[in-house]
Image (cartoon, rainbow, N blue to C red; front, side):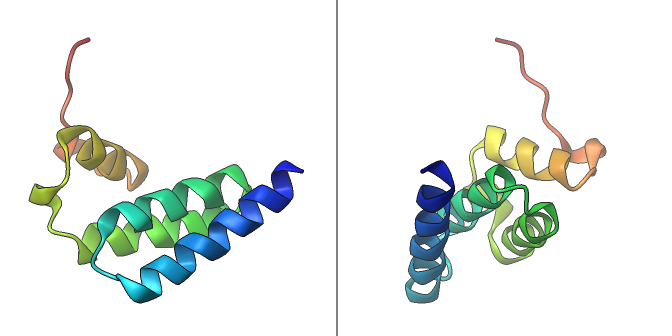
Length: 82
């Protein structure tokens, strides 16, 4: 059941990106779905796309940190305390 839901979500996010390609949230959500489907190479490509296409300053600090961590660019990761 979950596998089908992930496939449907991936299709939905892919279609939404085609309609609104500058919406970085859609790219991040698509990458998250790909990770949950164990499609790590595609997830990495998606995260790289959002990191180059989006204005990183428009993202929340936590989103920036997650992207930089995923890309192993640890010098740019913002550390915060809960």
